[in-house]
Length: 468
Ligand code: UDP
Image (cartoon, rainbow, N blue to C red; front, top):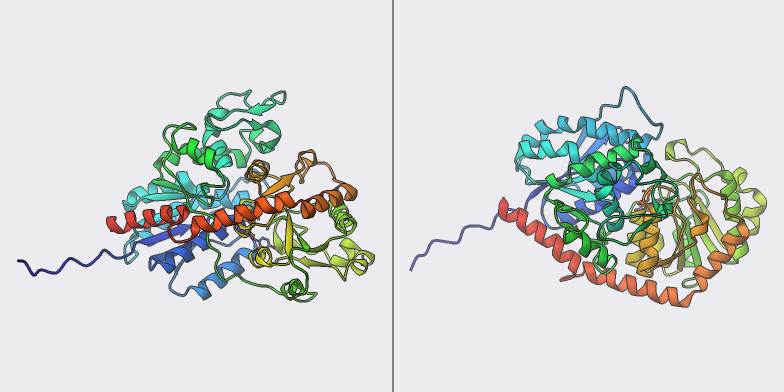
């Protein structure tokens, strides 16, 4: 009989996380970082410097204060000498891609050595060579729906046919999934030279170099699409799609608004009586549309909590609530409505028992947060992936979508009367409420111990631990 002790188990892996620009990209990375850290992994969080929005800097600092064991690697990005857009987020995507090679020395010198990189889809092509030089796998993290991911993955093929987005077409075909109505395709896709389009096409071409694609979705939410993409029906050479959502939320940064604490205001409202309105972190509606929305909220007769932004980048948001909405509106609605200018802690708002519905643009993080809490959504897509995401929301039973409203940004102005009617429909649809509740139950089951998403995440960590 040998009495040699079993070798010690391999240490948990060291994961370097590289998000891209904007809260919609940073938030899922911070959530994954918190999940990894709670499983004793060594975590390095890489952030581009300077960040575009004040919200990003504030949330990075807050996260690091709550997770002191996480290493922070800041790197200076090189901006384009010839910018082709004035969108600061797209420019930062491009600048990050251009600068990714600069990360090699600090990653190569890391101790313990880096076991894997988890990086944003937006840097898939440039990070591939850094990961190869380090001899570690790169996992891409997608910050959108699986359905939109299929469209992104197939985009290079679509672009190779000049008539693929012709205006007389009714729909766009991506193998394996139901056709996408032409109205859901982001308008920039019709221009192959648009920075948004070229970033997606370039990174899609490099996806086969990723070890896997981690996605903030869950099987019961997008079952057919996940099955199609994972059986090679969309494209043959894609790495496995790994649904790990809805990502766990961690302690949020709660900010007080000027007019008081909206969370304690919610505490005083009856259950499911408040409609929550927010269009994410970087959508600026026109002042005209904001006025109509205020009218709609008032006409609906429902209590409301409205987190309002008037500029794409928060640092530039100078509008004052009184001049924007008018004192008479604020006076008339003060007993049943709160308008927060700037930032509200959405995960805490959605979790609150007083919230009965969510008017939202269908940014994918917002969709997953609503799914996790089982809150019914009135989808009002504004740009990018949001119309495709709205289709997913509707199909999954989480929400309703008025297609005739089109794209919010750059589209028609929707009148207050119509908005009010739709809000009433959202708040009074009992069938929808039941379906949304069921989505919430499925979401919780997916991430609970032994749940499908948790299993997928554990398997990735197990693989990386064994490789160590
Ligand atoms: N968010 C928030 N408060 C706000 C605006 C946004 O907490 O006032 C969070 C929201 O919960 C989500 C993220 O910021 O996690 C925004 O991402 P999403 O994909 O929903 O939309 P985007 O801002 O990218 O359009």
